[in-house]
Image (tube, rainbow, N blue to C red):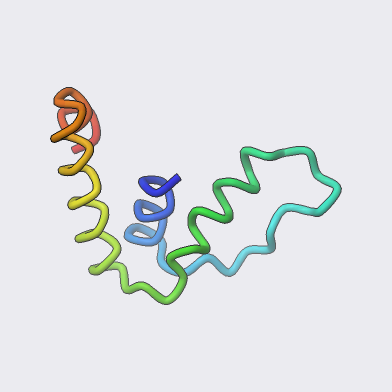
Length: 70
């Protein structure tokens, strides 16, 4: 969720869409919306820096992850 939220914030900016409905069973869409909205107010540049640091951290734990994500 962190990678998705930071990626969307870095590439699109703040999320101004409505959260998927309370009675919607699309939990994936709700999770994505929540992950992106968590970074609302973060500049695109800061989100990109955080995304890169996140990926580097994942690369330290999982060496093949950084090759795929960057």
